[in-house]
Length: 165
Image (cartoon, rainbow, N blue to C red; front, side):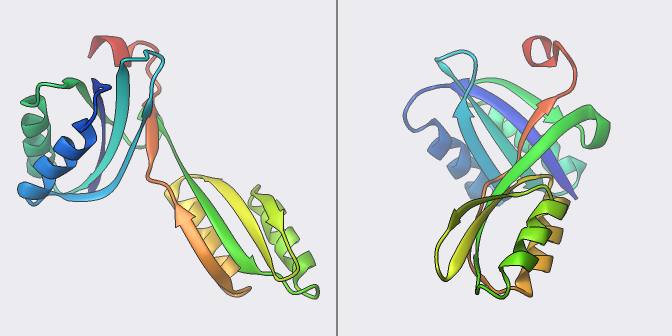
């Protein structure tokens, strides 16, 4: 079972390293980690996807809450409780005979072609993990050359959850 946790931290050097180090020392399995600026310039939002049961999640939250630079921790509920997205860029073989097939696949999945050359195409797709997994499975038939994928980023659907929890 996976859990998504949003952690607001002070925007200081080394905070991400301290958080990942703390979790790895405690042998918690981080599925993905993404960090970025927020609407407040001195605050960074780190989205963690942790693998484990409820007890593991509680331990992660308890350990993170002990760090000085942690401002707030919020468990994000899957489904209707939060909005979750990932980004993937996939480079595929694009022989002239296959290009129309690739374009059709891209349109079906509402992805975007961001670069084309004689031999390859680079495609960008944004969505939940299941959509990206399905897209990569279909593209495997075309020949994936290279792929990069972000970790999950998520926001609560609640209008005031980030400020008050």
